[in-house]
Structures are given as C-alpha cells and as structure tokens.
Image 1 (cartoon, rainbow, N blue to C red):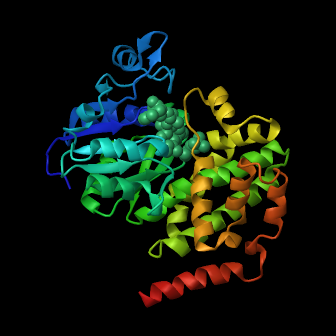
Image 2 (image 1 turned 180 degrees about the vertical axis):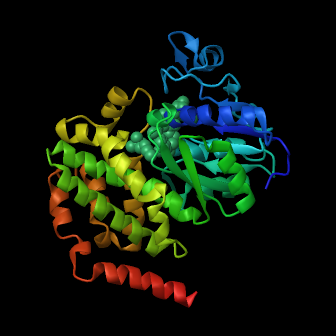
Image 3 (image 1 turned 180 degrees about the horizontal axis):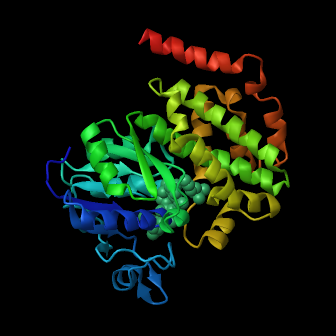
Length: 370
Ligand SMILES: NC(=O)C1=CN([C@@H]2O[C@H](COP(=O)(O)OP(=O)(O)OC[C@H]3O[C@@H](n4cnc5c(N)ncnc54)[C@H](O)[C@@H]3O)[C@@H](O)[C@H]2O)C=CC1
Ligand SMILES: O=C(CO)COP(=O)(O)O
C-alpha cells in the first residue's frame, strides 16, 4: 500500500465513465486530507472543432465529447502525455475501454511508482495466444507490478454524473487500501461496499455486458419483459457457473452486491450494449457502423467480451453449459440468426430438474474441502 499522507491520484482514461468518476474523485480530493487535491486525468488527445480536447477540458471544465453537459471540478487537470500523467501517482484509476489496456500498460511499464496502487473500473477481459483469457486487473498487476483493486457496479455513467442515487462494489484484498479507495470514490449518492472477493467482482463486470447484448437482441426481436427477465436470470446463472468453474475461491454472495444482479439489471435495460444490440437485430448494419453512428467515439465491450469468453469456453470444451454466451457470440458473427437466441435458451441446462442444487452443492463441497 501507499504510505504517503496525501496520495496523488491519476485517472487513466477520460471517456464517458472516466469523466463521470473524475467528477466524484475531484470533489473528494479537494476536501479530504488523505489526497493531493489536484487530480490528473490522462486524455487520449483528439481534435474537436479544431481545438484539442485537453484544452477544452482544462478551460471549460467539461468533457464536451464524452460527458457533455456535466461540469468537472477545476482541480481535475487533463494531460495528454501518458507518462507525465502517471509517473507521480500514488493511486492510478484505470478506466479505459479494455481493448486499449495492454498497450497502455506496456507504455507505463517501469515508468510509475513501485508502491502505487491501482483501481480498475474496466469491464472486460483480455486474451492472449499464450495465456488465454485474463482479468484486466491481473494483466495490470503482471505488467506493472502493483496491487490492483477493482470497482464495478450498477453505474450507468450519465446517471452517476447527474448524481442520481446508486451503489457500487470495490473488490480489494487489502482492507487499508480498500478503505482509502472507498474514501476516494464514495459520495452522498454513490455508495460503496468493499469486499475481498475481487475476481468475482471483476468477472461480473465483464460477463454482464454479454448478457446485456442478449437483452438487446430480445428487444430487437420485439419480445417483452418476461423474456428479458428470463434472459437476466439465465445470464446470471451462467455468470455464477462461470465463476464456479474458473474462479474456485469465488463467493456466490458477491452476486448480490451491486456488481452482480444490480449491474446486470441496469445494463440490460439502460446500457449501450443493450441499445446497440437492439439496432444490430433491427438493421443490416455492422457493429462497427452502429458503434460509429450511435456512440460518438464511445466503445462497446459486450461483443468483444463474448468473443473472448466463447474462445475460452471452446478451448475448455464447456460451451454446452453456456448457451446464452455462445448465442450472443454467434449472432454477432451472423453465424446464426437472432431468433435462434430463443431456440438456444429453450433447452438451457438450468431448466433441468435439480440444476440449482447441483450448482450450489458442488460449491459448498469445494468450500468444505478447502
Ligand atoms: N460508460 C458507462 O456507463 C460505464 C462504463 N464502464 C466501463 O468503463 C470502461 C471505460 O468506459 P468509458 O469511460 O465509458 O469509455 P468510452 O466508451 O467512453 O470510450 C471512449 C474512450 O476511449 C478513448 N480512446 C479511444 N481510442 C483510444 C486509444 N487508441 N487509446 C486509448 N484510449 C482511446 C477515448 O479517448 C475515450 O476516452 C469500460 O470498460 C466500460 O465497460 C463501467 C461502468 C459504466
Ligand atoms: O457498465 C455499465 C453500467 O454499470 C454500462 O454498460 P454499457 O457499457 O452497456 O453502457
């Protein structure tokens, strides 16, 4: 952990969620003595109507592209140079679309404080030829050699930025760091619970995006709330099964924190993955076209996560236990038509008598054996 009295914070990322969290973090560092008041925000530079985005943020205190209409505190300073932004930081908050994180970490290797701590808000996985699927926090830890906690929850960025009440979950092994990170991000309307089951928290964040795509397909097919409820339930069962199979120390209780069922619900109703998946079914457009037309530079995580997760399930020979994840991947690849989603869910293994007993008994037995 960091021993500094007044920890310097850098936010690595400045998209929709990065900017929303910067608003909370900036306010907190201004008033809490544990933190250096100035928050640096690494901004991937781009030109907006002939002006640099960093200049706009530093002069207008607003990320006009990714979080328009929301003022950021004036102690949040945009910096386009990644190394300059991060080299003095005691706390690094990683909040980029996951596809950019391997490159960012390679650039940061050896350039940050060795006793810094990380907090990853990134919902997704990374894959490599040698290692298969990897959690983003593990990749950051392996490449940068720092401890990395995670923050995931039912947190649509625009609603958080408008200060509507919500909850979130921090997964952190070290209780002192967990408390410090809670102080950094908690506000009146952003309530934080810290748990030590980090991997489950992070896996929930990555997998719920896939389920949200299935919810979007159902909307695109004109199906109603009963179908969506079934998708949420079956999706959650696949998420639990995934943790049981691949993260043996995971605790099913974690699914009842904000990172679990609550995030699944909000994303299946209000998220970008849901919205774009609905359009994917209703149009003949490619995902790239939809992302470009609808998201104005923001990035989808669900289709990529489906690709990464199904690649792993195929390698392990367990696709039959995850029909919903597999259907999403196949529909995006246009290997099967969208209505096949329902065909694949009709014979879901969860419908077999005694499935839940088996799922939970196996977990209890494993826990007893440990
Ligand atoms: N937006 C939301 O409501 C929420 C998002 N998240 C998660 O937070 C993470 C970040 O999401 P957002 O902040 O919404 O990002 P976003 O979807 O707004 O992505 C755009 C960001 O990517 C940056 N970018 C584009 N090309 C880049 C490159 N080559 N290298 C580095 N950066 C590049 C852009 O500058 C911009 O800051 C994701 O994992 C997402 O799943 C989690 C909770 C809520
Ligand atoms: O993670 C989110 C809400 O918690 C946002 O989900 P989307 O990326 O689908 O918008």
